[in-house]
Image (cartoon, rainbow, N blue to C red; front, side):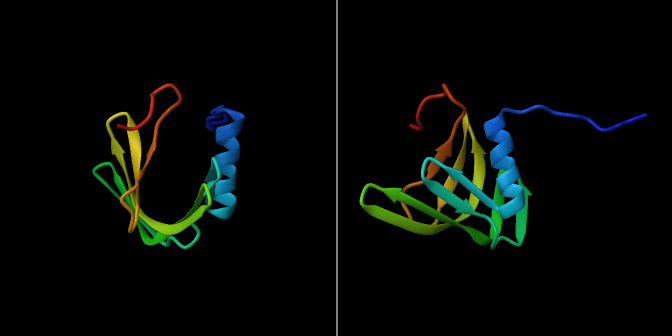
Length: 101
């Protein structure tokens, strides 16, 4: 008797998860979060804290941004990724949920 469970996901999600597990990297829309320096992830009350922080890189027009991410948390209708040393954070939402307020 085989007790393994198979779960089908979209090819895009599968590719993201595979890359994350193989390389510790998540890429989306020209931005990269590199979790390879992270040694510990603490999860408590809907918040994941990364130690040391993950590195974050993106391009905003002619400006290249490189910083770190110390935590991500579940918020109403999305996941908030707090960019260290920045007044700007990232909010991840499912398609069709609209932009962050």
